[in-house]
Image (cartoon, rainbow, N blue to C red; front, side, top):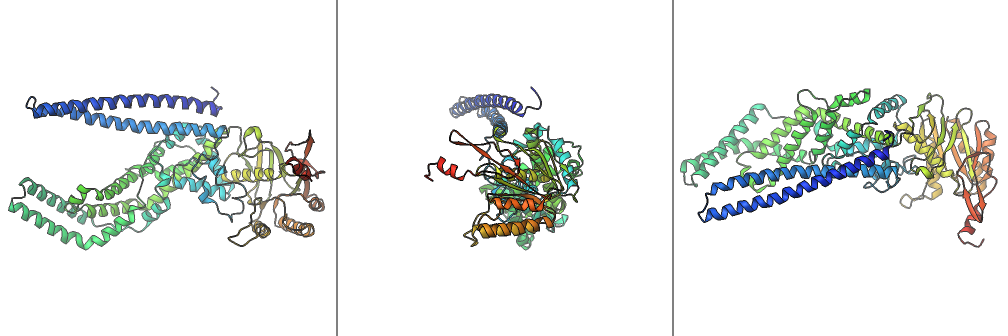
Length: 598
């Protein structure tokens, strides 16, 4: 098997995990049958013991065996669930490679979509069949948010080079990505990292150690008094007095601090929910040694002296579980006697005093490593995609060879080379309907997003300078905001014009919502203003009068086009970009092709 064949590796591992699942399921079924036999044996022993034919202590052996079998089956069920998650992990990987991944995630990160962002909606960054859905394998909300932030804002070349090195180290670590994929329950539905970090980072008010010790002594004394009373069938007057005295002393101790304890419990209940996966992810990362500077730095954030971060988070999770257990009837009955809530409140505040300042760093490390791991998984699945090179910030440029759209299937992706390198700073793209103009803009935009996020790009080679990106490709009217399509377009163009320099603009059908005269005058003025601000970019058009703008701005401007041809009554597109201006239109041909009599 060639190591660079991701599909073959995924398929082999999927076959292996499927076989493992079958073996585990078979073993679980055998243990379930054995449990039934042991239960029946215990019932038989109890029956004969009641009849006086056996001593009741004979039942101890089957009960012990039953408990052992229950424990064993619980471990098997955990292994089965993890194996199922591994199967889903490899199935999703194969689906991505076979271009069947669309709709595989819950919502494609739609919560990150801001309609006023300068390019997110135009480039399909979020939602179904989006770039985020293709890239994201994060298990945590923090990991998803970090990846989304990288797609929404460019990083500096120095930071991108550090990410490249980290992604390069993570790329071959398929075992690590599988281990992370099979851990715990779905953290995204539970913990909100911003709430956990805010709670942990707030000033702690720990109780003095002497008070915690006193609470423990009082609860132990009351518990002994309760056992004494229960052991005397409630008849011993001394036992009743001892329990009453212990209760009064506890009340005198606990009532004055009740409001503060309840405030502590209420504050931790939401942030500390569902921490099991977070502790498991931390434990997995703690066990791995990294070499790249960025990964070593991130791992350093979770490396705590004496007790690692995973155990500290697990301790908070146990405290949260114990707080939840107050709803248990037994705890409800015994809890006041042993100062259950009071001791938990003190323990939580002690935990926050010890660990609170570090929680933000732990969450930061997990989020960033998850985002890097997502990019590494994408890089591993696309070994032919290179990392981009970076040009100096002073020279605005975008230079790509064999550029393709990452969201298109390989057999449908037609690649074009695009060069916006001095002196050329503007390409006016003309062409007929459906010829590939908009797809070219999106391919440039999405690859720019990937390049400036730290990911590989869909090209034979790409060199790009640090740029602000703006796109007006899918501008829509808004009833809610009272904007027509034309108003929405010019507001987006104003936003693009105000981007920090240097910028890359991608404009589809420039000022297509107005008449030819206004379009020609407005388009030329806008393009000149963009170029004066140091911008580079492309604008598509059906209006060939706009092509004269490129001629007037030469050598800074140039014309390119897409074309089609009519074969046997059908329009044929090759989606290849060519120099010059298009010479024919296909609007009438398209209308006739769908049966309109024009």
